[in-house]
Length: 150
Length: 150
DNA sequence: TATTGTTATACTCTATAACTATA
DNA sequence: TATAGTTATAGAGTATAACAATA
Picture 1 (cartoon, helix red, strand yellow):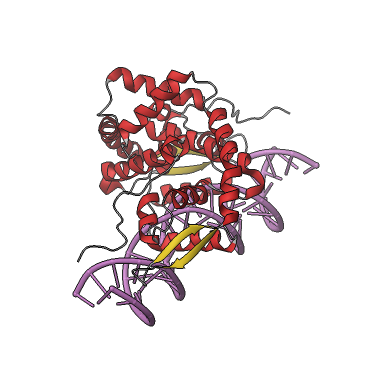
Picture 2 (cartoon, protein in one colour):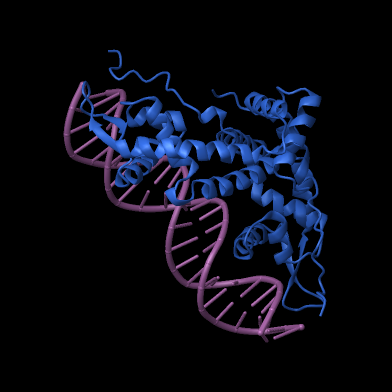
């Protein structure tokens, strides 16, 4: 029996013209692919981001990490709890300031990150596979103009 | 006294090259501006999206709305509870199928949406103010290629 | 049997405020 | 006094599973 209230084509109105709507859809797709790409590692963009920043800035303190990844200090605590529980990161006592922690990747953390990098590369490629090289550059530039943040 | 662990420039590593990172930043900016733009109305992109879709498809049922805005049916229940509590939407009993609700904007809902539209217009303009008209078109196209969804 | 809306529940992500230890 | 990290707590936002009414 055919449906009474026939669903099929719902009119999205002006939504598709809104940047925020586009971004949300794009992000849903990105997140889903990210998780698949990193599969067994139980990774999320946020955990991965923390690993990357710590690797690039060994010894940085939590407050700085928080600013870098745009999270509250308290939020970073739980990110690090997760990472430390998985033995990917260690919190060393700050040398000069004993209030702070000096964050570093463990050997395991470095190894995982190294393994992850090519997968993230693939992930990135998959996302933009419908774009030419120049389109990819353009997209990055345009997004950068909306929110400059390198 | 100057800071010991000098924060300032944290290296974000490869993050700025990742589409997901760019999208997240862009979305943070969009959301913040959206809330400011709609200010007094206590709006969110998600509530606004529901209003738009209901206006464009009066009488649609919750399941269809859920599919349209890519939320679970159960999630849509709470969205509609909020909207109905604010008297912006009504759930009418389905005519042909009494299991379903036929969703409609109330007069208040239509009015609010009408008032909101120019503000959303401004909001959108503000976001892309650093882009030329052609760049705006390009951006929409490129995002559409990554996640085609009109 | 299947679908619609709903509830109960839970999980993730995030922030605010207050605490402690250090400075 | 001020800062670093932490805890306790709470609020969005989301989903899954099970349920009653209806098909």
